[in-house]
Amino acid sequence: MQEITGRTRILGILADPIYHVKTPQVMNALLARHGVDAVLVPFHVAPAQLATLLEGLRTMQNFGGFIATVPHKPAMLALCDETTPEARHIGAVNCVRREADGRMVGAMLDGIGFVEALRASGVEPKGLRAYLAGAGGAASAIAFALAEAGVRALTIANRTRDKAEALAGRLRHVYPTLALSTDADRVREQDLIVNATSLGMRPEDPPPLDIAQLESRQFVAEAIMDPEMTPLLKTAEARGCRIQRGLPMLESQIVLMARHMGAL
Image (cartoon, rainbow, N blue to C red; front, side, top):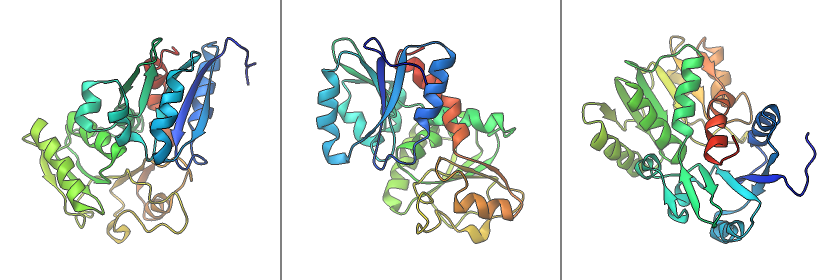
């Protein structure tokens, strides 16, 4: 690891819990390769203290920005001084730049990173039938990115169906010809299965979808970074499905995040 001095620019990642994040390793390796005098460190903050932390970071003059992950992405939208149109559309922020005057400028890059990772794995979303588990910040970003990439149909499944319906409504407003469903039972008919929930981070978690319906022709992708092989991915691989772990999504968007925070 590079030497940290009084000139080093500080970046962060905000999460609750924080133990599972892989972003510091990936981002710091990128910064080192580019010879950038900056370091990204993990900040463990609970939702109730999120606004307080941001007020403190505004005053930290050598702080360049941060990445927000579970569960802070939706809340970050209202806490930023300025957000990109994409972030407002999706309803969440996952990367924030601190300007010299302390203003916080938020963007949402999850979806772009996910679609780029799919393409790097040889999967072109255009024309596919996709099933998305989740309707939170990351799921919303992935949903809009899949719609933009041209999926033929998108099923959004969420434990709280109202949230799935709300996301479908926002998508319908922008992509009126996209076939949308919130029927969580429609797993078997899909080509692409995506878990964008936190279910699978803990051993006791229930599965994020009906794994009995998985078929070998399907491609199953995770947004969870740790564990690297979630129970969903293990089951999918055992059934002959092609799979994508969560880390490629992060690797695909890390450069975009560094640029947004002004580190590259």
